[in-house]
Length: 453
Image (cartoon, rainbow, N blue to C red; front, side, top):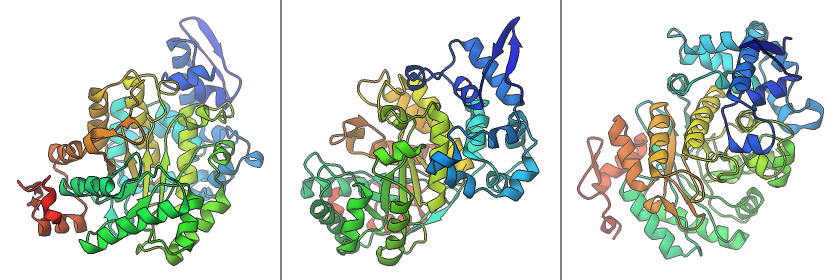
């Protein structure tokens, strides 16, 4: 395995696959803070050259975190299709990139080959791609999942109605739910981030959202984004849950910091399939994002993008209905500005889709980042062009409980209109029945909460 190259009469020598992956990454403040990034644009290019000539077998034989010490690595490797891997193990990363981007390679070929790729291989090929490469490759892949509704059908774009409230006031949450639904946001899920993580409070929010869905015969899912152990206890107590949520990361140490492991996820999924209110079989909802391992000091010397790809390899074990990326949620210590946020969103959409996941994107940013609404809207448009399954719908685009910026109900409607997309099939019929959509377009009654009187 060659780990060196010459550029402009300067010799660059790397020591490990992990170092090459880190230094081939586009500039990110989290990698710089962790001392994993290239020292210059020329060193970054040298790392990309070395990476492009590296064989997939070299990456397979050198996982960035050892199999013996890391649960995430074990799940990625144990779930790999070895027959497919054997067919492609002698490819270089550069050849993998060319295969993905060639016009004759489509969804069937990419779905098959993905089963033989480790997460590090997927991260590696993303590092060799430009922004237009990532959008083009992402657009080739479309993954469906079924909970109460089908997400991921061609020509359809879904949204999570996110009616958070700083004190979990039921009336405030209900008002936001009604507003979101009236603009067509909520077909992916009505998902509430609770301020109070107690079983009692979470159960109350689950019952409220479930009863509202039943009363108005809304074809969607409900979820309260508490810690998974809290949701499990609420489910055991009889709370109506359509989707089970948890944030995940790309290293075992980071997941342990989240209070999470395979055993807990296995138990939650088994309980959801037995006691959850959804038809299924896809009953899990995961949230990820570049930088969580850095913020938890659990990166194990691995760059943020590679860890994010490993998170997707971990996620796919439980066949989720939704995977929601929130790479800009942490702040400038991981993604400094809008440019870094946009690049991370494009990388994450591609990597998640190549893992076979029903990916959604939240082009989020915090108020202390060097980013603004223009950056967010660019990220939203580019990832929608790349075929993201869903986005968030936040009242006014400003989450008053979590204090960050995300797509608003109006942004949701604009993205659909801009690209000619429609709501999820079952939800569109409900919107037509409520008089807020006709022939795929919002009517004058959209945004009118009196439809729920």
